Length: 542
Image (cartoon, rainbow, N blue to C red; front, side, top):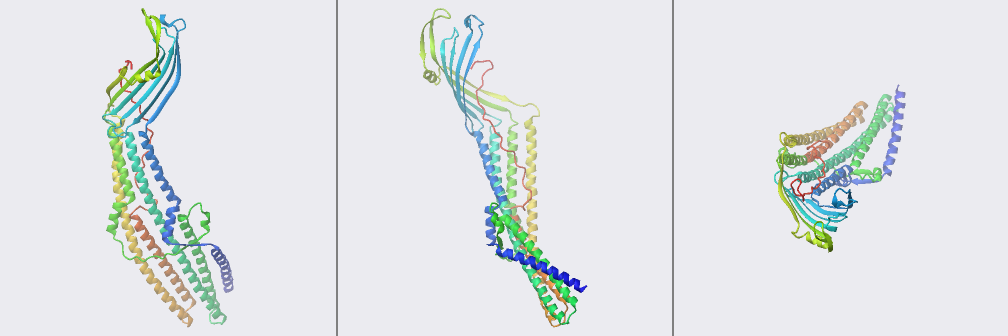
């Protein structure tokens, strides 16, 4: 049985030596990057793709603000065309072939929604050239031109706030929210980098602890072999020491794998995705953990978080958006009363037939007036067309606007309660983070004392073993206790650094992955600029 255990231990030892040697050779060939904590944070801020996604979201929201402002952009429109209308002969004046009317026409204008008061104005110019074979036509060809100015102003609904102003207000707040979200994501990313940095540092220290533990086990096995060869101890003690060496070597391999995983987690946070060569670099964290100088002031930290946390600021903007929706939909319940005004000046030109005698008269001559005469006449009061008045419309009964306003009011109350809930969550998170800082500080002190005592016990047990007053089992047990105490100290130190990082971050932002804030409002909707035309009696000529 002893021979079997010896063969198995030797085989495991040879295999692990080969793996460790290969890994060490690969590590030596890799280029090393000495990395400080500040350097790691800087790399993450500049290169982290997840943070870049959030940063681009601010550009998206800025573009949405531009979309909303587009509602006030002047709109230019023009129409140019030709038409022909042939009517059959239906009376004495249409002749045998009917009336053939041909038109060349164009209309050009500009209209705009005003950014205050929700009024709209328009100005347009139209021109036409008409030819006809009508026997009673006085001008052929007929040149017409006109200038029209119109204005529409809401007096109740839409006067204080309309859909375009609502969209701009909400888009601006959403843009502010995106900047707050970027700062929040930056805090979360920095915290993740710091935790990953200290975790990697701890795993490397654990590799060193496991290596020292392996060295102790190998030294004990070497001494046992000398004593076993001299017949001072039974062969079973040598087998026990060699098995312990194999187990410690396995622990070392696992520690190295864990360290490589931690290195990749840190690498992923700080690398440029386009730089594939960064995967081949070996990171070496050079900063050392800083001992906690003073315990945190929980009440001051809670007050700071409630005053300045980014998620609370975003929730406050969401509440303001909800209030804006309430104001807008409340305004939409008012009657739609609008002042409409328009003025048009017209001009006439072309070849005018001069007639004498009874109707339709005999053409005795012509008088020509060019298109310039028609255009100039449009700016005179010779042929005015104007209108001014008020339009009123109002939905009777339970309207869509009433129901929408009721819904918006409920959403406003939800947004207010969401802020109250977030404040409770923030206070709880800060208090919990402060407790973690205090408890980990106490754990570090306890673990440090335990490691010191374990070191002393191991040294005493080793001296007793060297003079023959102890056994391989007791020395091995002392080595295991020392290893566990050192690992506990490393874990407590890592937990303390992580707790400090979390405590600093939670005063500014919630932990990553925590849902906060309300539902984002809908995208900007295109609002066409209406064309004011004035008001005229139905059936009356313009």
